[in-house]
Length: 390
Image (cartoon, rainbow, N blue to C red; front, top):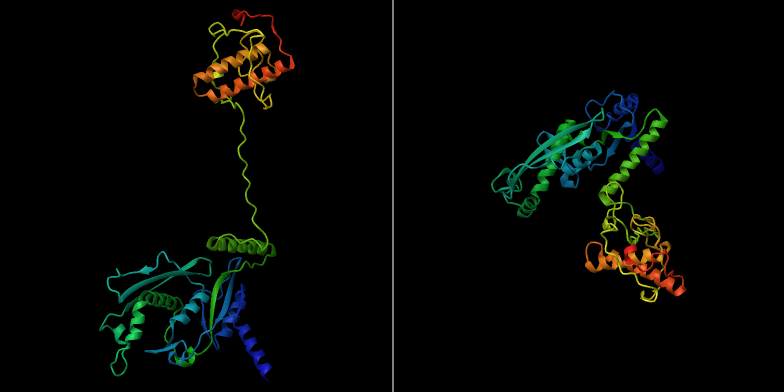
């Protein structure tokens, strides 16, 4: 017998909750539930066909219909009985109302600690998928000798000071809750009820985006969009999802920039623009003293590899290599001229002093390598030691 009673209770609960996007099914559920339940429905819902992706969802809300003095959520007021704000908040959530915190807030200036006036502004989804605004106000006055404070006196006129101080301490949140309750009551037309009616089950209907349509392909697209939006909303609140246990996020590897020796600068046309392009013409350039093989004193060869530097000038004299020719392929005479010129420029300082010094070092190193190997030509271009021929 107990099992049958439990099964009947479960079946009854299933009937009081469901969803559909077909007008006939929604009307049938409304007619059935209104017979023994308190039903709250968004205005204009009955008989309307919803857009694709939207459905009507109805939910039973658990409310303790005992009176407040017995631990329940029902209060005796003038004209009948009403629900406590805690019960109204659950109905509001099931109805789908969201509160606009930017437009809601305190209306008074906060001059008195025991007085508060509050405006609650929110909205819920209408049958056409558009938001329907709701609003409510409340004035909570707990100042001495005011009706809000006088209600804490008993029949003998004695003041419940402890309860009054608790109310005064939380006056802002109390006023906010009452303003939201008033907004919901206006939205659904809720009033004081007889005790017999308020004790019935409570069922709330709302419009919800479920992704359900008559086209299975479109429904899959909607469901994917809903899932992605849910992930984005969660990430906005709590950040990206954590890595599974045992896995670590791979750190991003950032490579250090590679230093390129003697990197030239370019102008807007892509042409190398540096002081090497302004080398003096042969007739005005100082003619270096050309030493014989026995007089040359190139520095000792170091351990750095050769071949990373190139000839920086366009050909301006007979026998000059092409610009960009590796220094390892430049004749000895031209290479020595380059080394001496760069030594001079480095000694003078300036914008390219470091690069001049490096280029001179490279040129002298190549000459040293050739001297060690015995490959230096004393007179590579038959111009001898006469500086006027350079």
